[in-house]
Length: 447
Image (tube, rainbow, N blue to C red; front, side):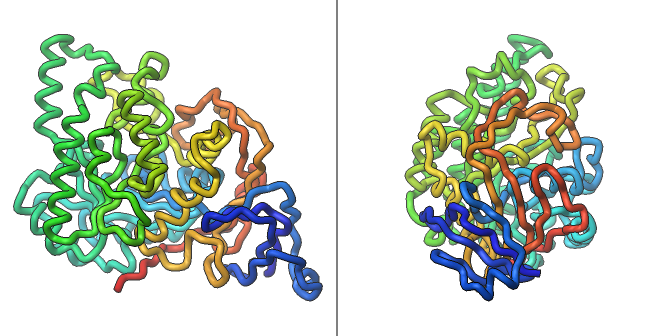
Protein backbone atom coordinates (compact mmCIF):
# COMPACT_ATOMS: atom_id res chain seq x y z
CA UNK A 1 0.00 0.00 0.00
CA UNK A 2 1.09 3.53 -0.74
CA UNK A 3 -0.09 6.62 1.10
CA UNK A 4 0.73 10.28 0.56
CA UNK A 5 0.41 12.63 3.52
CA UNK A 6 -0.19 15.78 1.53
CA UNK A 7 0.42 19.44 2.28
CA UNK A 8 1.50 19.14 5.91
CA UNK A 9 3.81 21.46 7.79
CA UNK A 10 6.74 19.07 7.99
CA UNK A 11 8.88 19.62 11.10
CA UNK A 12 12.17 17.76 10.84
CA UNK A 13 15.89 18.42 11.32
CA UNK A 14 15.41 22.04 12.46
CA UNK A 15 13.21 22.88 9.46
CA UNK A 16 9.53 23.69 9.04
CA UNK A 17 8.24 23.54 5.47
CA UNK A 18 5.06 22.75 3.61
CA UNK A 19 5.52 19.37 2.01
CA UNK A 20 4.24 15.86 1.44
CA UNK A 21 5.50 12.39 2.32
CA UNK A 22 5.01 9.18 0.34
CA UNK A 23 4.73 6.03 2.46
CA UNK A 24 5.38 2.81 0.55
CA UNK A 25 4.97 -0.29 2.69
CA UNK A 26 6.96 0.18 5.90
CA UNK A 27 9.14 3.00 4.65
CA UNK A 28 9.24 6.65 3.64
CA UNK A 29 9.92 6.56 -0.11
CA UNK A 30 9.76 10.23 -1.08
CA UNK A 31 9.62 13.64 0.52
CA UNK A 32 8.12 16.33 -1.70
CA UNK A 33 8.77 20.03 -1.22
CA UNK A 34 7.03 21.01 -4.46
CA UNK A 35 4.29 19.58 -6.64
CA UNK A 36 3.78 15.81 -6.52
CA UNK A 37 4.14 13.99 -9.87
CA UNK A 38 0.78 12.88 -11.29
CA UNK A 39 1.84 9.22 -11.43
CA UNK A 40 2.66 9.27 -7.70
CA UNK A 41 -0.68 10.90 -6.88
CA UNK A 42 -2.61 8.33 -8.88
CA UNK A 43 -0.89 5.32 -7.31
CA UNK A 44 -1.42 6.23 -3.64
CA UNK A 45 -4.13 6.98 -1.12
CA UNK A 46 -4.14 10.67 -0.28
CA UNK A 47 -4.42 12.17 3.22
CA UNK A 48 -5.08 15.90 3.21
CA UNK A 49 -2.83 17.28 5.96
CA UNK A 50 -3.16 20.99 5.22
CA UNK A 51 -2.76 23.01 8.39
CA UNK A 52 -1.42 20.01 10.32
CA UNK A 53 2.08 19.33 11.70
CA UNK A 54 3.88 16.19 10.53
CA UNK A 55 6.71 15.03 12.76
CA UNK A 56 8.71 11.81 13.23
CA UNK A 57 7.32 9.42 15.81
CA UNK A 58 8.42 10.21 19.36
CA UNK A 59 10.96 7.83 20.93
CA UNK A 60 10.61 7.47 24.72
CA UNK A 61 13.76 6.01 26.23
CA UNK A 62 12.35 5.42 29.70
CA UNK A 63 9.03 3.72 30.49
CA UNK A 64 7.70 1.16 32.96
CA UNK A 65 4.88 -0.85 31.39
CA UNK A 66 4.61 -3.22 34.42
CA UNK A 67 4.49 -6.53 32.56
CA UNK A 68 5.12 -9.15 33.84
CA UNK A 69 4.04 -9.30 37.44
CA UNK A 70 2.49 -5.88 38.04
CA UNK A 71 -0.21 -5.89 35.41
CA UNK A 72 -2.93 -4.52 37.69
CA UNK A 73 -1.12 -1.18 37.17
CA UNK A 74 -0.54 -1.45 33.43
CA UNK A 75 0.62 -3.88 30.76
CA UNK A 76 2.34 -3.79 27.40
CA UNK A 77 -0.98 -3.75 25.51
CA UNK A 78 -2.63 -0.90 27.40
CA UNK A 79 0.39 1.31 27.89
CA UNK A 80 1.69 0.94 24.32
CA UNK A 81 -1.77 1.95 23.07
CA UNK A 82 -1.68 5.01 25.33
CA UNK A 83 1.78 5.79 23.94
CA UNK A 84 0.45 5.41 20.39
CA UNK A 85 -2.36 7.88 21.09
CA UNK A 86 0.27 10.29 22.40
CA UNK A 87 2.42 10.13 19.26
CA UNK A 88 5.07 7.79 20.72
CA UNK A 89 6.04 5.18 18.14
CA UNK A 90 8.98 3.56 19.98
CA UNK A 91 9.78 2.97 23.63
CA UNK A 92 12.49 1.47 25.82
CA UNK A 93 11.18 -0.31 28.89
CA UNK A 94 12.76 -0.84 32.28
CA UNK A 95 13.70 -4.09 34.05
CA UNK A 96 12.06 -3.71 37.48
CA UNK A 97 9.13 -6.01 36.78
CA UNK A 98 8.31 -9.33 38.52
CA UNK A 99 10.40 -11.28 37.76
CA UNK A 100 13.08 -8.68 37.13
CA UNK A 101 14.70 -8.61 33.68
CA UNK A 102 18.17 -9.40 35.00
CA UNK A 103 18.86 -12.45 32.82
CA UNK A 104 18.82 -12.78 29.06
CA UNK A 105 16.18 -15.49 29.41
CA UNK A 106 13.75 -13.19 31.24
CA UNK A 107 14.60 -10.33 28.88
CA UNK A 108 13.73 -12.39 25.82
CA UNK A 109 10.38 -13.32 27.35
CA UNK A 110 9.53 -9.62 27.33
CA UNK A 111 10.54 -9.29 23.70
CA UNK A 112 8.38 -12.28 22.80
CA UNK A 113 5.41 -10.80 24.61
CA UNK A 114 5.86 -7.39 22.99
CA UNK A 115 5.98 -9.00 19.55
CA UNK A 116 2.49 -10.35 20.26
CA UNK A 117 0.81 -7.28 21.73
CA UNK A 118 2.81 -4.04 21.52
CA UNK A 119 1.06 -1.36 19.48
CA UNK A 120 4.36 0.44 18.82
CA UNK A 121 8.05 -0.41 18.45
CA UNK A 122 9.94 -1.59 21.51
CA UNK A 123 13.18 -2.38 23.24
CA UNK A 124 13.92 -3.55 26.77
CA UNK A 125 16.85 -2.84 29.06
CA UNK A 126 18.58 -5.62 30.94
CA UNK A 127 18.90 -4.76 34.61
CA UNK A 128 22.16 -4.81 36.52
CA UNK A 129 22.44 -6.21 40.06
CA UNK A 130 25.38 -6.62 42.39
CA UNK A 131 25.97 -10.15 41.12
CA UNK A 132 24.85 -10.53 37.47
CA UNK A 133 27.78 -8.83 35.73
CA UNK A 134 28.51 -11.72 33.37
CA UNK A 135 24.87 -11.82 32.25
CA UNK A 136 24.52 -8.11 31.45
CA UNK A 137 27.80 -8.06 29.56
CA UNK A 138 26.54 -10.89 27.35
CA UNK A 139 23.68 -8.94 25.76
CA UNK A 140 23.74 -8.27 22.04
CA UNK A 141 24.24 -4.48 21.62
CA UNK A 142 22.53 -4.56 18.24
CA UNK A 143 19.32 -5.96 19.73
CA UNK A 144 19.14 -4.51 23.27
CA UNK A 145 18.95 -0.79 24.01
CA UNK A 146 21.21 -0.87 27.05
CA UNK A 147 21.97 -1.82 30.63
CA UNK A 148 19.91 -0.19 33.39
CA UNK A 149 21.67 0.51 36.69
CA UNK A 150 19.83 1.73 39.78
CA UNK A 151 22.51 3.70 41.64
CA UNK A 152 19.73 4.52 44.08
CA UNK A 153 16.87 2.19 44.91
CA UNK A 154 13.40 2.87 43.58
CA UNK A 155 10.40 0.74 42.74
CA UNK A 156 11.66 -2.85 42.61
CA UNK A 157 14.69 -2.45 44.89
CA UNK A 158 17.40 -3.23 42.31
CA UNK A 159 20.06 -1.11 44.01
CA UNK A 160 23.62 -1.64 42.72
CA UNK A 161 25.89 -0.34 45.49
CA UNK A 162 28.96 -2.57 45.19
CA UNK A 163 31.80 -0.30 44.03
CA UNK A 164 33.74 -3.17 42.47
CA UNK A 165 30.69 -4.27 40.46
CA UNK A 166 30.10 -0.72 39.28
CA UNK A 167 33.73 -0.29 38.20
CA UNK A 168 33.74 -3.57 36.30
CA UNK A 169 30.43 -2.75 34.65
CA UNK A 170 31.51 0.71 33.52
CA UNK A 171 34.87 -0.66 32.38
CA UNK A 172 33.52 -3.55 30.32
CA UNK A 173 30.08 -2.49 29.08
CA UNK A 174 29.95 -2.66 25.28
CA UNK A 175 26.55 -1.00 25.10
CA UNK A 176 24.98 2.07 26.68
CA UNK A 177 24.66 2.21 30.47
CA UNK A 178 21.56 4.10 31.69
CA UNK A 179 21.54 5.11 35.34
CA UNK A 180 19.07 6.17 38.01
CA UNK A 181 21.21 8.33 40.31
CA UNK A 182 20.28 8.96 43.94
CA UNK A 183 22.64 8.26 46.84
CA UNK A 184 20.96 5.71 49.09
CA UNK A 185 22.89 6.57 52.26
CA UNK A 186 21.95 10.25 52.05
CA UNK A 187 18.29 9.33 51.47
CA UNK A 188 18.23 6.99 54.47
CA UNK A 189 19.81 9.63 56.68
CA UNK A 190 17.27 12.23 55.56
CA UNK A 191 14.41 9.79 56.06
CA UNK A 192 15.41 9.13 59.65
CA UNK A 193 15.58 12.86 60.39
CA UNK A 194 12.03 13.38 59.14
CA UNK A 195 10.78 10.25 60.88
CA UNK A 196 12.04 11.66 64.15
CA UNK A 197 10.08 14.84 63.46
CA UNK A 198 6.85 13.45 61.99
CA UNK A 199 6.75 9.75 62.85
CA UNK A 200 5.04 7.79 60.06
CA UNK A 201 3.04 10.82 58.91
CA UNK A 202 5.71 12.64 56.91
CA UNK A 203 4.10 15.27 54.65
CA UNK A 204 4.53 14.78 50.89
CA UNK A 205 6.11 18.24 50.79
CA UNK A 206 9.19 16.75 52.47
CA UNK A 207 9.80 14.36 49.57
CA UNK A 208 12.30 16.68 47.78
CA UNK A 209 14.14 17.12 51.09
CA UNK A 210 14.39 13.37 51.70
CA UNK A 211 15.36 12.46 48.15
CA UNK A 212 17.41 15.62 48.10
CA UNK A 213 19.45 17.55 45.57
CA UNK A 214 22.57 16.42 47.45
CA UNK A 215 21.56 12.76 47.06
CA UNK A 216 21.11 13.27 43.32
CA UNK A 217 24.37 15.13 42.78
CA UNK A 218 26.51 12.72 44.79
CA UNK A 219 25.27 9.76 42.76
CA UNK A 220 25.25 11.48 39.34
CA UNK A 221 28.77 12.84 39.82
CA UNK A 222 29.97 9.36 40.77
CA UNK A 223 28.46 7.90 37.59
CA UNK A 224 29.96 10.64 35.41
CA UNK A 225 33.36 10.15 37.02
CA UNK A 226 33.27 6.40 36.36
CA UNK A 227 32.19 6.92 32.76
CA UNK A 228 34.97 9.45 32.16
CA UNK A 229 37.50 7.08 33.70
CA UNK A 230 36.53 4.08 31.58
CA UNK A 231 35.17 5.73 28.42
CA UNK A 232 31.68 4.33 29.03
CA UNK A 233 28.65 5.39 27.02
CA UNK A 234 26.64 6.76 29.94
CA UNK A 235 23.10 8.12 29.90
CA UNK A 236 21.90 9.77 33.13
CA UNK A 237 18.14 9.46 33.42
CA UNK A 238 15.51 11.86 34.82
CA UNK A 239 17.76 14.65 36.07
CA UNK A 240 16.07 16.94 38.58
CA UNK A 241 18.50 19.49 40.04
CA UNK A 242 20.38 22.63 39.11
CA UNK A 243 23.59 21.28 40.68
CA UNK A 244 23.71 18.30 38.33
CA UNK A 245 23.73 20.52 35.26
CA UNK A 246 27.40 21.35 35.77
CA UNK A 247 28.25 17.70 35.15
CA UNK A 248 27.25 17.91 31.46
CA UNK A 249 28.52 19.66 28.36
CA UNK A 250 26.50 21.33 25.59
CA UNK A 251 26.70 20.08 22.03
CA UNK A 252 25.20 17.61 19.54
CA UNK A 253 24.25 14.30 21.14
CA UNK A 254 26.04 12.29 18.45
CA UNK A 255 29.35 13.74 19.60
CA UNK A 256 28.91 12.78 23.26
CA UNK A 257 29.68 9.71 25.33
CA UNK A 258 28.02 11.11 28.46
CA UNK A 259 24.44 12.24 27.92
CA UNK A 260 21.56 13.60 29.97
CA UNK A 261 17.78 13.24 30.10
CA UNK A 262 14.97 15.28 31.60
CA UNK A 263 11.41 14.07 32.12
CA UNK A 264 8.15 15.87 31.47
CA UNK A 265 7.16 16.12 35.13
CA UNK A 266 10.39 17.85 36.14
CA UNK A 267 9.73 20.48 33.46
CA UNK A 268 6.03 20.93 34.25
CA UNK A 269 5.74 20.71 38.03
CA UNK A 270 7.73 22.06 40.97
CA UNK A 271 7.44 21.78 44.74
CA UNK A 272 4.75 24.47 44.88
CA UNK A 273 2.39 21.88 43.36
CA UNK A 274 2.59 19.31 46.19
CA UNK A 275 -0.36 20.79 48.16
CA UNK A 276 -2.62 20.36 45.12
CA UNK A 277 -1.44 16.99 43.82
CA UNK A 278 -0.19 15.24 46.95
CA UNK A 279 1.24 11.77 46.39
CA UNK A 280 0.00 11.76 42.78
CA UNK A 281 3.16 13.77 42.04
CA UNK A 282 5.45 11.56 44.11
CA UNK A 283 8.24 10.65 41.71
CA UNK A 284 11.82 9.43 42.19
CA UNK A 285 13.86 11.58 41.79
CA UNK A 286 11.56 14.07 43.45
CA UNK A 287 10.11 17.13 41.77
CA UNK A 288 12.10 19.94 43.37
CA UNK A 289 12.26 23.75 43.54
CA UNK A 290 11.21 26.32 40.92
CA UNK A 291 14.90 27.21 40.61
CA UNK A 292 15.77 23.59 39.83
CA UNK A 293 13.02 23.49 37.19
CA UNK A 294 14.31 26.63 35.52
CA UNK A 295 17.87 25.28 35.55
CA UNK A 296 16.62 22.15 33.76
CA UNK A 297 14.96 24.34 31.13
CA UNK A 298 18.14 26.35 30.63
CA UNK A 299 20.19 23.17 30.25
CA UNK A 300 17.68 21.67 27.83
CA UNK A 301 17.67 24.72 25.57
CA UNK A 302 21.48 24.98 25.64
CA UNK A 303 21.86 21.28 24.72
CA UNK A 304 23.42 20.19 27.99
CA UNK A 305 20.33 18.00 28.33
CA UNK A 306 19.92 15.81 25.27
CA UNK A 307 16.61 13.97 25.57
CA UNK A 308 13.07 14.48 26.89
CA UNK A 309 11.39 11.32 28.19
CA UNK A 310 8.54 10.36 30.54
CA UNK A 311 9.61 7.73 33.09
CA UNK A 312 6.01 6.57 32.61
CA UNK A 313 5.29 4.51 35.74
CA UNK A 314 1.61 3.79 36.41
CA UNK A 315 0.15 2.93 39.80
CA UNK A 316 -3.50 2.65 40.75
CA UNK A 317 -5.20 5.58 42.42
CA UNK A 318 -5.77 3.40 45.49
CA UNK A 319 -2.02 2.82 45.74
CA UNK A 320 -1.22 6.49 45.24
CA UNK A 321 -3.80 7.44 47.91
CA UNK A 322 -1.70 5.89 50.67
CA UNK A 323 0.14 8.23 53.06
CA UNK A 324 3.56 9.44 51.93
CA UNK A 325 5.57 6.60 53.48
CA UNK A 326 3.53 3.90 51.72
CA UNK A 327 2.52 5.61 48.48
CA UNK A 328 4.58 4.31 45.50
CA UNK A 329 6.59 6.69 43.33
CA UNK A 330 5.75 7.23 39.68
CA UNK A 331 2.93 8.34 37.43
CA UNK A 332 1.47 7.74 33.95
CA UNK A 333 2.64 10.14 31.22
CA UNK A 334 3.07 8.60 27.75
CA UNK A 335 -0.32 9.66 26.37
CA UNK A 336 0.28 13.32 27.19
CA UNK A 337 4.02 13.97 26.97
CA UNK A 338 4.07 15.33 23.41
CA UNK A 339 1.01 17.53 23.87
CA UNK A 340 2.44 18.84 27.16
CA UNK A 341 5.64 19.88 25.39
CA UNK A 342 3.64 21.49 22.59
CA UNK A 343 1.84 23.51 25.25
CA UNK A 344 5.23 24.87 26.31
CA UNK A 345 5.77 25.87 22.65
CA UNK A 346 2.55 27.87 22.80
CA UNK A 347 3.91 29.62 25.88
CA UNK A 348 7.14 30.50 24.06
CA UNK A 349 9.31 28.30 26.30
CA UNK A 350 10.60 26.14 23.43
CA UNK A 351 10.16 25.87 19.66
CA UNK A 352 8.41 22.96 17.97
CA UNK A 353 11.58 22.00 16.00
CA UNK A 354 13.45 21.85 19.32
CA UNK A 355 10.79 19.54 20.75
CA UNK A 356 11.20 17.28 17.72
CA UNK A 357 14.96 17.34 18.20
CA UNK A 358 14.75 16.31 21.87
CA UNK A 359 11.94 13.76 21.59
CA UNK A 360 12.58 12.21 18.16
CA UNK A 361 16.04 12.90 16.68
CA UNK A 362 18.18 12.86 19.84
CA UNK A 363 16.97 9.50 21.21
CA UNK A 364 17.58 7.93 17.80
CA UNK A 365 21.10 9.37 17.65
CA UNK A 366 21.95 8.64 21.26
CA UNK A 367 20.91 4.98 21.11
CA UNK A 368 21.99 4.61 17.46
CA UNK A 369 18.57 3.29 16.48
CA UNK A 370 18.38 1.88 12.99
CA UNK A 371 16.37 4.02 10.52
CA UNK A 372 14.08 5.78 12.98
CA UNK A 373 13.69 9.19 14.59
CA UNK A 374 13.73 11.26 11.37
CA UNK A 375 11.60 11.96 8.31
CA UNK A 376 14.07 10.67 5.75
CA UNK A 377 13.73 8.66 2.57
CA UNK A 378 14.50 5.02 3.32
CA UNK A 379 13.61 5.36 7.02
CA UNK A 380 10.70 3.56 8.66
CA UNK A 381 7.48 5.52 8.33
CA UNK A 382 6.95 6.23 12.02
CA UNK A 383 5.04 9.49 11.71
CA UNK A 384 2.70 11.68 13.75
CA UNK A 385 0.12 14.10 12.35
CA UNK A 386 -0.85 16.82 14.82
CA UNK A 387 -3.68 19.32 14.72
CA UNK A 388 -2.18 22.51 16.19
CA UNK A 389 -5.56 24.15 16.65
CA UNK A 390 -7.59 21.34 18.25
CA UNK A 391 -8.16 22.20 21.88
CA UNK A 392 -9.08 19.36 24.22
CA UNK A 393 -9.17 18.62 27.92
CA UNK A 394 -7.80 15.55 29.71
CA UNK A 395 -10.70 13.78 31.43
CA UNK A 396 -11.07 10.19 32.68
CA UNK A 397 -13.14 9.27 29.62
CA UNK A 398 -10.23 9.91 27.20
CA UNK A 399 -7.42 8.47 29.35
CA UNK A 400 -6.10 5.18 27.97
CA UNK A 401 -3.79 4.14 30.82
CA UNK A 402 -4.89 0.97 32.58
CA UNK A 403 -4.64 2.80 35.92
CA UNK A 404 -7.29 5.24 34.64
CA UNK A 405 -5.83 8.54 35.83
CA UNK A 406 -3.35 11.21 34.77
CA UNK A 407 -1.53 14.02 36.57
CA UNK A 408 -2.79 16.20 33.69
CA UNK A 409 -6.49 15.60 34.42
CA UNK A 410 -8.35 18.85 33.93
CA UNK A 411 -5.58 20.35 31.80
CA UNK A 412 -6.63 21.85 28.47
CA UNK A 413 -4.13 21.27 25.68
CA UNK A 414 -4.05 23.32 22.47
CA UNK A 415 -2.63 20.57 20.19
CA UNK A 416 -4.00 17.10 19.57
CA UNK A 417 -2.45 14.03 18.01
CA UNK A 418 -4.70 13.18 15.06
CA UNK A 419 -2.94 10.25 13.40
CA UNK A 420 0.02 8.02 14.26
CA UNK A 421 1.73 5.76 11.72
CA UNK A 422 3.85 2.82 12.89
CA UNK A 423 6.07 1.20 10.28
CA UNK A 424 3.93 2.74 7.54
CA UNK A 425 0.59 1.58 8.94
CA UNK A 426 -2.07 3.95 10.21
CA UNK A 427 -2.27 2.65 13.78
CA UNK A 428 -4.13 5.55 15.45
CA UNK A 429 -6.70 7.73 13.75
CA UNK A 430 -8.71 10.39 15.59
CA UNK A 431 -9.25 8.32 18.72
CA UNK A 432 -9.50 4.93 17.01
CA UNK A 433 -6.76 2.31 17.45
CA UNK A 434 -6.12 -0.31 14.78
CA UNK A 435 -5.49 -3.34 16.98
CA UNK A 436 -4.08 -5.29 14.02
CA UNK A 437 -0.99 -3.06 13.85
CA UNK A 438 1.95 -4.27 15.92
CA UNK A 439 5.33 -2.67 16.50
CA UNK A 440 8.74 -4.12 15.77
CA UNK A 441 11.81 -4.79 17.87
CA UNK A 442 14.19 -1.84 17.66
CA UNK A 443 17.63 -2.54 16.25
CA UNK A 444 20.79 -0.56 16.99
CA UNK A 445 23.78 0.31 14.84
CA UNK A 446 26.98 -0.42 16.76
CA UNK A 447 30.47 -0.08 15.36
